[in-house]
Length: 147
Picture 1 (cartoon, one colour):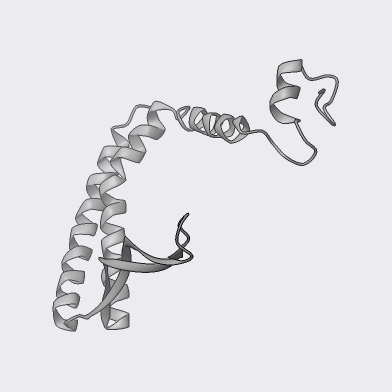
Picture 2 (cartoon, rainbow, N blue to C red):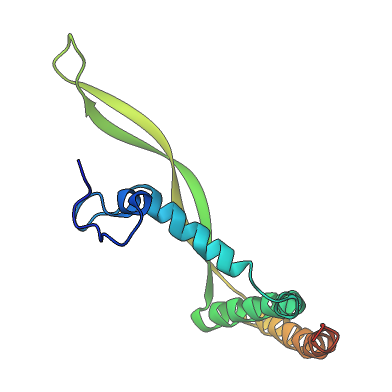
């Protein structure tokens, strides 16, 4: 059947890909959108790629500082853990009316671990000193990037 609501100006292939039903895209539309985004992301100039690479260590230190500040403000750190879980389901079999089935799946659990405020503050001070040193190095690396 011909596609519904397809503009006549589009080629037949495009009408078939995107306008199969009113209000619904076909299965290829998300893949095509993802490919377009990846293509645009690859269009960064060499200078932009150089700047992103130069700032990578600084971003990592900023993330560590934020993590330690959050843990210090809360008084505890959240540690994710994977634990096995057993799920009990009702299963129907061909010759028996009802059976219980078990299914073993990994589950996520978060554990709160209290932090030592003095240790966290010392580590935070060390990270801030390292960040100040890294800012200078990052500025030098950015200045060395091609124009």
